[in-house]
Length: 300
Image (tube, rainbow, N blue to C red; front, side, top):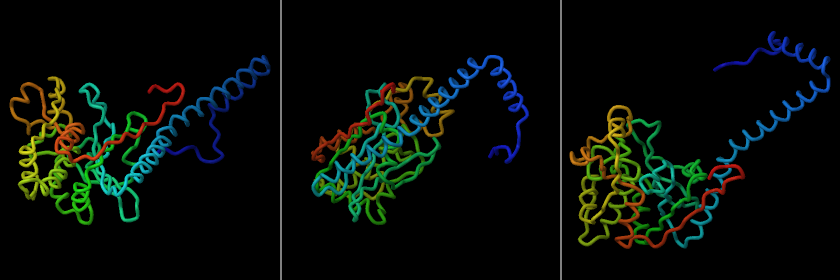
């Protein structure tokens, strides 16, 4: 850590600068005072604008978290909902949200977020539990929050899977991470894929015929029979080369050869997860929590 000069230390260059400034002010007093005043005003404005820019994401994050908690609290008997935020910009693929999580109401009435995260763009992931504000983060300035409210029956199943020790939810987690993980392979997993496979375990228990999900292979097999359709994202050749040799969190070796040749990759996205829930009438409703309004001069 770089330390500042000790107390009482006098910087020689700074001293000479101050002497030069005093000499200039003595020769041209009005001009010197105006120049000094201009510098003070400009510096003050710069510090104020910098502080405002730094504070804006934090304020927006907490405001959106408060709005989200109020909206969830207003849902009668809600125990588990799905939250989708706009972390990465996927607009070139026609996608608005990139990251999906569960929000579970605790016994004290507060909402806790459970999701899979890839830290520092590494090839590993962990399951995390946190508050609404941490989940929302700086996405509060970029996109609305999409909320999916499962049916009561599905919420009961999900609550049992995600509460307590959550053994099955942990068995459905693969620590080897790839942002473009193939939906029907157990080699890797992305954040939305873990949510989808937990949902599969919950839905399969109430399906006809009833299916028992003991691990990822079972969950993926059931999703095939449930006609889950992943999204298709096209990666240009340069992106594929980068994914193979540069990005630790983007492996494509689990995809079929045809996809690797064409560059059209099947991926679990927020949209594809909510689509299959709607197809199975497993969602009661959806909500949208508005993002923070941009301040004057800010680019939306």
